[in-house]
Length: 107
Image 1 (cartoon, helix red, strand yellow):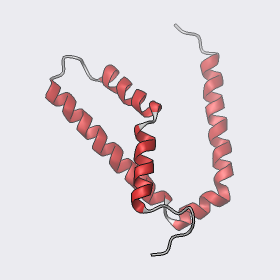
Image 2 (spheres, helix red, strand yellow):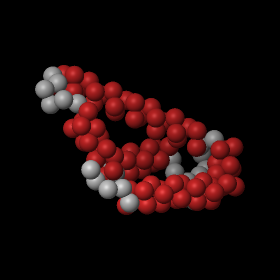
Image 3 (cartoon, helix red, strand yellow):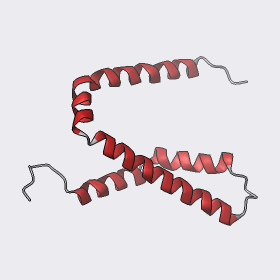
């Protein structure tokens, strides 16, 4: 099978995605905070492990769904055409959240 220059194999794409997400400090902090805030320290270890397995499976399924969705030609074409508006909207939302957070006093 002939590949264009810069095109990844399915295994290469999976490896890049796995390493990128695995080394993402935001993901690590999210799961760490979730476990420390939501799960009681006195919860049996087997149940904690079950929560961990569930989160790993649910996260894997989510990322597989997202990858399948965004690999569709129609969705990719839509993002190529309208992606700048999505970026601008998300930027405005994040700026608004930052401004609100900056002017919110701690109680």
